[in-house]
Image (cartoon, rainbow, N blue to C red; front, side, top):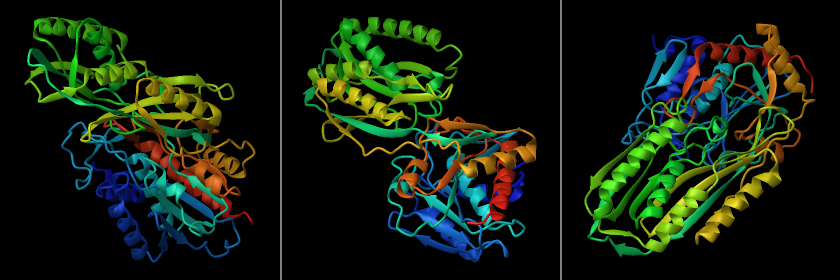
Length: 486
């Protein structure tokens, strides 16, 4: 069985088409062209703005022209993570696999975040039997790496009264709030020094961690490969002089790093001790993460003497800062049980060709002051280590409105269909809703979607029965709104 054979058929047919269109963040040209061609084929009006967002509109079913206009909203881009580092997300389609009740990808992220939301919107727009009011389907760019589309949405792009964000990941749950976030970038400038000839050099490699979404999975306690690498390097430096010629870990600000490596040297007289130290460290990590990281691998191999290394002062400043840098849950919400309030993700460490090492962290919180508090703590730490620190613009959280009319309608739709009242929740991940509410304060909004697991990692999967429930809930919600008057 293939994805195209699944139910609801129209949704999965469109989702299959979307998986064949490369759509990394900031490179949405191909998926934008697909959306515009889709609108043209189906005689639907479409428009774009300067940042590349697309809106496809559909008039109301006759007799329901006076209903509130509903905006169906999702994002075009996907997180690109692969077990095969050579996988070309710019040009290669995703290979999907049906595995029992789940859809997966073959060694890469699936892109159900948010391809399934896009597919559901397009299926609604082409459903000849659905009763609905005026519809606007908004597809934003670059949600995953900067929310550029939501920040830069053009004037007049949307004119609706209600917004349904289709970018959530849990069946039978409706989200009415989300965390805000801000990225912090810490840049070390280093001098090149000749690699000591009397040193032996090793590549320390950490790979195949579980990773996951730095918002939705941060509370699970999974290993951060950058932190594991820094911990071993710090332990090594306590006993021996070390020299680092290369360091790299993580990729995306919103993904828990699954892999990291460093090329490090110690005096040749200590090389066997380093192997013993690593074996002891592996045993320690296996014990600490038993049951959490079943596929994690830590290895070491000898390498040739590199041409240069990072100067010793910067080496130690970097190792100490990475070891001390906070990662994980900072505090839990006192208002919603089980909700992470504030967290930080030590997302990536990258060497640049201009003698710089760039460390990126991502902070989230449903309390704006605490978001900035943890960001400033990260700033203080890396500034003490000698790095230049900058913060991004950040994005606002979405304050829950427990009196939301659309929340009640969407909840009633699910209850009517399945006899279960969905849970009303806030999410620690960032949604574009906070930015939309900031620009369009009149909007009544909720977010819902099918069950996804392992998002932002190659283990991403989507629950097939939940997709049908999600789509039926979406259709019934739209039909109920169609009976309302502005």
